[in-house]
Length: 146
Image (cartoon, rainbow, N blue to C red; front, side, top):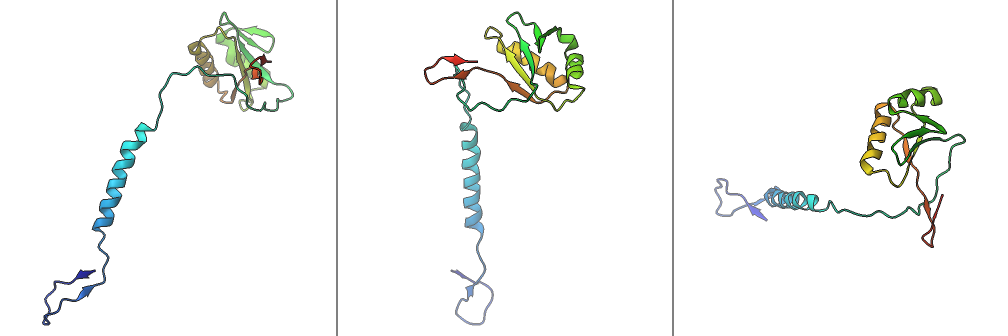
């Protein structure tokens, strides 16, 4: 409850019906500071050895387009070996220049992560942004199935 300190001829002080927002602003600023400090702490940056996926397999299209990175870093589109420089031309020929088609990317276990990312960057530069990574399905016993 507040009082009015305006000049009045009576000796009584009248009540003020206005809301005092200063405490509300103080509480909001404290909460803002707490969230600003806590938000960066919620991100995790830990090195992890990722396990095989046990997610439900997705439906495959009738004619999937597989791009394979072999252990020697050579590329194969379907069953045809291609060179990195002609990747975009080979993809355009196979898809009819439809860059909305999904490219299924497979890689040998021996291929380093950086080399796989280079191939993904080549796909992105060629305009193929829908990329699906192909892996082995994990069975409950731990054995991998193709």
